[in-house]
Image (cartoon, rainbow, N blue to C red; front, side, top):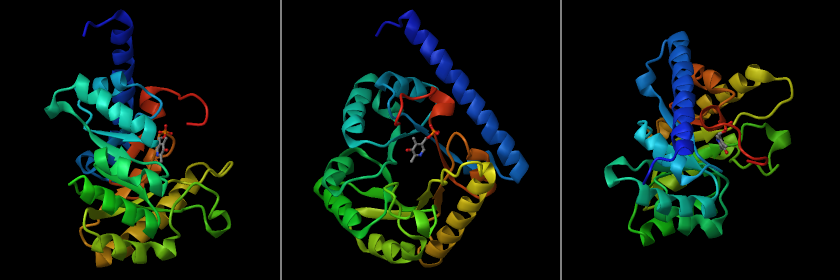
Length: 251
Ligand SMILES: *Cc1c(COP(=O)(O)O)cnc(C)c1O
């Protein structure tokens, strides 16, 4: 591939975004007395092209996140053509997932962050076995509170987490690795709202770990609230716009 001037500019912008976020992570870790090595950065590439994923990989990014099957499956194929096998990132599926897309996602995702119901867990397990693969699975926990449950943003009720964890633990094809949460969008609540939500996620995580000690991943924190997530003990951050720029609407 020839490096067109636009491509070089884009790669430079991605490098700057990545450096800025790595600096934020380092500062937040310093403030929280944590080692940045304990944190895995998943760069969310939804709405951005395969070129950007390849650029991220060349800049040392090992984990990327996608939230729609159709877009992700095409991008995975495209990226495979742009990078050597050793450079290819691990793919994290972070979006709400319909059961009928589970078999497709099971063919390319390495980690699924959004398992929030038994039926989806069973469909993913079946898809993984059919593909001869094993998927790392996180349980998405709804942090919006009871009044907001069922609003379509997904997530299992915190009270249901242990039962779902036990099920995932029994399914061949899946490896239970931890929990994931998205802080609620509360007008004016700012980082306090996020801190509260991530504290709740931490409690659910500890509860799940008490029975499944290997499930030590806590996926929390996005562009706007990664500091609160680090403070609350997150192990994985899912950061998109702070690195890649703003997405078209409804991303
Ligand atoms: C899009 C998305 C992100 C990244 O959001 P940014 O605000 O762009 O960092 C993280 N998690 C989930 C579940 C997402 O859908």
